Length: 149
Image 1: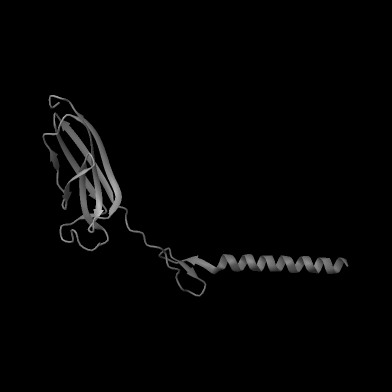
Image 2: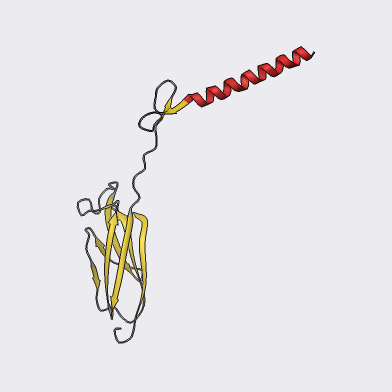
């Protein structure tokens, strides 16, 4: 009886060690950092595109606002504007108080003049060529005083 129990424990131990050794030896990184199957075939690694970024600054002087912006990992392009989506390119929408004002197809400063008195929301949003939003935006809140200040 004792001999059978010892035999069963030895088989369990060998099976456990065999499984563990097999599992750790299945995949290994190659020189490029790819995970490779023991047979030598690389496992496909997902490729991620760089996420578009929008940085912007607004300077308000009286009833005038100047917006400077920089776009990273995204090309502002007039070439495919309003056409089929091309990955990594599009344009920028300027929206003031919920109303679209201009679509920028190149890097430039935006100058808003004669802004009426009151509180205003100014938003820049990146869009694909086909005008679908990328949900990358910058929003500013300003207040213009009654005398233009």
